[in-house]
Structure formats: C-alpha cells, structure tokens
Image (tube, rainbow, N blue to C red; front, side, top):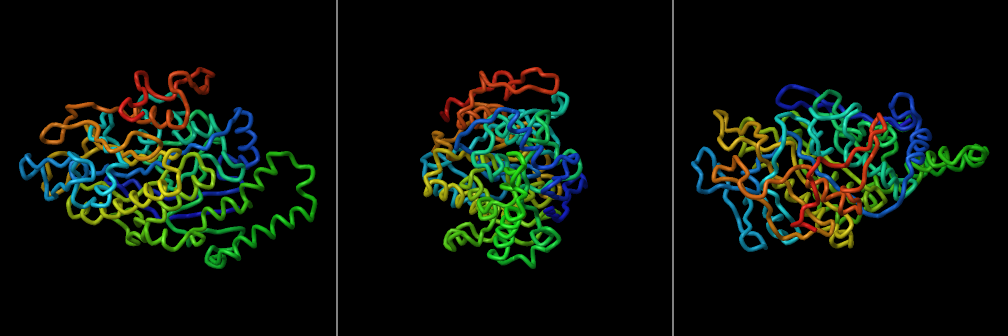
Length: 444
C-alpha cells in the first residue's frame, strides 16, 4: 500500500482540499488494481503515442493582465502592467511573461474563451462540459476518455496521470472518470508533500535515496518470483505487479535521474504557500514531460493559486514569472526532444477576471470571457486567436468554446469527435464534445 498525503488549501469561499493516493486497494470502493486493469481490457483498448499535458490554473487567472492588456482602457481597468513585443509581429503580451514572448512562434494565445460558469471547479477545464448539464455519473474528464479509448501506451505506465492536488470537497474536485467508472480514474503519484509519502510502512525520508527505492522494488520482484507467486495468477495481476514495481514508472517519477542542466532550466519555483494554496514548484512541469515520455497519454497539472480578489497586480507580479518559466521550459523541452508533434499542451483556468479593479485592488470572477494558451501537438502556432472589446469584458472576435479546444486536442490524438462515442451508464452513446464543437480550423 502506497499512501501520499498533501497539504490542505482553500479558495475564496473557504472550501478546503487535501490530496491522497492509495495504491493496492487505491481507495476506490475496495477495487484492487488488477480489477481496474481487467475493466480497462474489457473496454477494448488500442495503442498510440500521442499525448496531452494540461496545465490547470486554479482560481481563474486575470486574462487582461496576461495575454490581453488594454492600454486604452481607464486606469481602473487597464491595471499596472505594460505589454511587450513578442517574436511574432503584432502580438503583444504582459511584460512579466518575457520568456513566453520570446517563443511566441511556438504558442497560440486564445483571448476569447467563452461559456464558463462562475464556479471554482476544474470540471469544465477537464471535461469541456458544464456541470449543470451532466448525465448520471457525470461527464468523464479528457484523461478518462483517452484511457477508455486508447488505453496505456506502456503496460507499466497508466494512461491518465494526475499531478494536481486532489480536493476532497465539491466543487473543486468535481472532475473525474464520470460514467466511465473508476477503471479510468487518474493515477495520482504525486501530491503537495512528498515527505508524507509512506511506502509499505517505510517513510519516503528513509527511502529518499533513489538506489534504495529502486532496490526495494527489485527485491520485491525477486521475492515474488522466488516464491512462485507469479505463476498461476492471471495477466491482470501480473500487469498490476508491473505497474507497482516496474522501474519505468518509478524512474519517470525520480527527478534525480534528470540531467542537472534540464532541472536548472525548469527551476525550483517558490516553496512558500501562495495564498492558502500549495507551493508553486516547477518540478510539476518537468514531471509531466517525463511521464508522457515514459508512456502516459494524458497528464494534468494544477499550478498556483489565481483567485486574486485582492492585490491582483502584486500577486500576479510574483506568480506570472513562475508560470512563464515553467511553461517555456516545458515547451522548449518538448521541441528539443522531438515530442512537439505528438504532445499537445494547454494552459487555462476556470474563468477570467473582472475588467474593473475592486476596492481591494483585486479582480473578481468573470465567466463571460477568459484566456487559454496552446502549444505543440502539431498545431499551427505563432498566432493569436480571438479578441475582446476595449475593456476586456466581452469577446468581440472569434469566441471559442471549451468544447472546441477539446475537439482540437482529441483531433491531435487521432480521435474523430464527429464519429467517436462512449456509452453512458444507460448504454446510450455519447459524443466526446458538445454539439457544434469541431477542431479549430485555425490550428489544424
């Protein structure tokens, strides 16, 4: 049994969160890993090597202080930040995102995301759907859909990996496998606090040395084989042992195996809690790349705390450089490793922020328009999509629905959203995205 506990945190409405993972019983209604693997196989899985990395920004980042600055707006709207030029003529972004500006030819900012709800949840970012319209069991997250349709690329690496903290209470942890069931739930190897990890009764502190950790896995495999336990168990038990003990996954999770220059490029981040949230550690970006390289098809990451009801610019001035460094390190790393055609990257939050600053110099929730950032995946980059009015409050050019981004991501994986369906709990076929949502013609 492997248990990971993390620190708790709160959003503006006081809801707390705490992450945990159990391997073995997995804490999923008593289902053991072999049973989950059996369920996956029964679903009829196939293979590919495409992948998605989704960077979720909890709380809703301020779009008008990142990719859509409004210099002509009144001072209480335009804020303190100035735009800077990028490598693509005509595209300007915030002065606190200089690294992103330098690789704009590899990026696609979307300034006109619409259709959000005024709720703090990852549901829409991870499912592409509104919570209020969900069927029995709920809509599955994109990683769960990929797990269902394509299965693991490598037997020892789960198809869907979640690096974001698990939130105990609704609405923040609303996304999941939905009606696809626990067999397609995200595998969460990482939490806010590695020091809380317990492996078979031995603390991670005692097993911090990589060789000791890997040796314990090797010894376990040898003991299993020596006792003959591997003989006579079915293929799913054998695969379960492989997931839990294979060097492939444990090595992907061991950042000490990474080149020091690469680690330095990603940086360390800020170990101090941001607001009431977890530290902003850059290792999440590096871990995501290592996991897709090891075989994961979808990796989701939650980064930072963007619920700026007070001191919007002060908070953004501290947080934007970290996001800037992490995303650029990830995108450049994917390009240098030849993964830029296969791995799609999307960065976004649940909604935007109000055009007008409030009495506390903050921006409140604004679901009418928000932003996103796309990269890699073989998409046509070096362009900006959409525009808002002079106050940054309404989309006036090319409004983009969440489902359109999802349709594009599925397209990048080789999945046709016009033809592909998944069955809900009643056996009714459901399309992967909302009606009318197709891959974005600007990107493919």
